[in-house]
Image 1 (cartoon, each protein chain N blue to C red):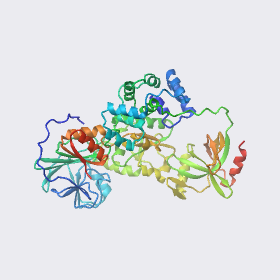
Image 2 (tube, each protein chain N blue to C red):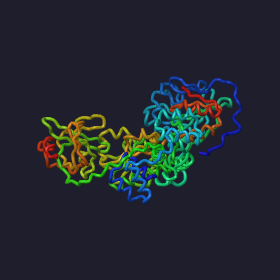
Image 3 (cartoon, helix red, strand yellow):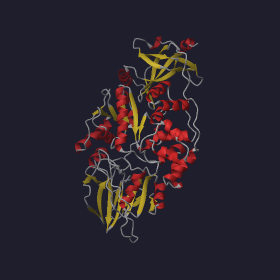
Image 4 (cartoon, each protein chain N blue to C red):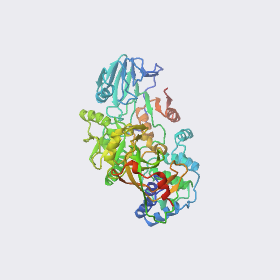
Length: 258
Length: 330
């Protein structure tokens, strides 16, 4: 149950994270997880408001305190999880948690034995409000696309960088990616010495540094200035040998798309 | 902290007398001693529970705090007229006797006890009942009237043990180190930052933001057991933990850190809404949780409680439902 909660901690898991999780758990748990993430929901035990009522009664929490708590924690599944004291005893697996859930007493016993994050997830399962569906894996492996792009902005926490392509006289933002390439410390040192403007946490640099990006595909997106979203994009390399003036335009990239 | 059962023998009921502590626009005020506690407005004489900026402000005629709290307060406030006092030492001020007692919140933090002719009031300042690896542990002080902070005065705030949370942080740090990524922990520069160092000592190299290092250096010289640290200036060593303030991460300094993961450590991280936007989140607070507040109130044996900061109204209502006389002090 803890592993399953960790898997879902950052929202819907990526296929990679899911397969890593599957290698760590026993067959029963992996089967239960697969069912849940394929969209099948377990039978609802009770609505979240009822679970909260059981917890309030079991912990002797008066109504006026529940009301005060709801003001800063309006999610009843989360509130029911937080009101129980820290977990004691051994933690049941995901499969055990779901199989033994038929009464208020079962619910309280199981919920008490779970740490906070797993408890919230358990409450969502018990109240039938669990929503997480694994994206169907992309079946057609493609040869990755490549493009050159110009660094325009850096957010030091991360750190992440915004890359842009020339379009007419302007630079149009293409994508924002985390910097993990080996030359990152040197790049940040350069950026730190060349900040031209600040927008909140963002730092603007002169558009002189060229990078090679790699991506799995592109899809139209009317909400982006560039009109597209790159799929599975990553920073491949810093290209100090290339000049910004030589970077192909946005139109040239769009022409590549099928 | 020792969890005493609720006392059966309370202090003898007192005749109605003038309150020993009042709320005024400048802050808490003791009329018989003519001093304020943690004032924010300018006053002639201030008794300070600890060095956080919402308790120790500039501009007071004189300051009195524990010997342990004084160096950081001087560092933060600059040129002030200030005096230190030992924990437990009694001092006559005007018509009252005053003493300072450990609050377990940050190094040198204190509750302030005020006595007049057998009647005792205690102003808690900020406090934490559970022990940590750094500061003087909380001591319950018996009193008739207790002014308690209620920053986390709701039953949704229930902390796991210090050891358990430090274990979670250590695992996060080691996972990052194994991937060659620097770990950045965001923490308040005085108190939380040093508590993290003390609790995570001996695992790997610990670096700091200059603001954190300055306070750490002062506490180290005072004799608090802190591991060696060094200022992160440019890329930190492989697998290092960097302790920085949230503000620091929005500065150019953060660009020297290279690839890193960020985590926050605070009591507010108990709430999912507060965890959004931080990389990792650890629930670690320097304040008492729900159980800690209840244990502290019971241990004072007080018959009258005033609540301050945070969830003052619900917590006062909770104490009333348990038969105590309690109200929010505002």
